[in-house]
Image 1 (cartoon, rainbow, N blue to C red):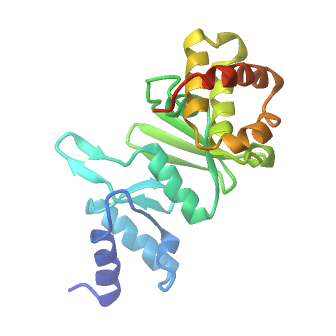
Image 2: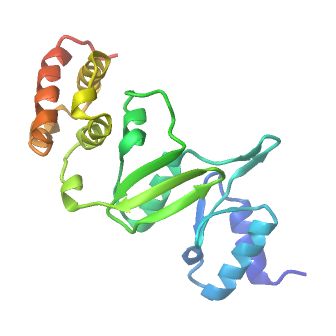
Length: 206
C-alpha cells in the first residue's frame, strides 16, 4: 500500500489538466530527493513525461503516440513558473505571426529567466536567456515582429511579407505602443514597418 505522501502527489498529478507542468520544486513541502524519485517512478508508469532535467509534463497518450501541448503553451507555463517573460524567435516567431505556415520542429524563445532545453519526442524547445534590450518593447506585436523579420532577413522580404506586416499593424490593439517600439527596431526594419503602417490604415480590421 502506498504511503500518504505518494498518494497525495499521485492524486495532484492525476487530477491535473492536460499540459500541466511539474517541477521537482512543485512539491516544496516534501524532500527534494524523494520527490525526484517519485516523479521518475510516475514517468515510468506513464502518468507524466520528462521534458528536461527535473521538469515533467502531463501529456496525453493516444494510439498515435504521446500528444504534447504546443511549444508556446509549454514555454508560457515554464515562464510563468520562473516569473519570466518569453519572446518567440526565428522560425517560431515567423510562424506565429503568419509569415510562414510551416510549424518548426525545433522552436526557440528568448527568456528573462534561465536558459533550458526541453525535449518533446522528436521536437525540441530552446529557451535562451536574452539581453535586456529584447524585452524593452511596450507591446508584444513589435517584439515578436522584430524577431520574425530578423529570421526572414532584410534581403528576403517579399511583397507577401509586406502585406502581412500591414495586416498585423491594422489588426493590433497595441497601436499606442508602436511609435515607441519602432525606435527599438533596427533601421532597416523601421523603414519597412513605417511604410506598411501607411498601408495598414487602409485595411479594415476583421
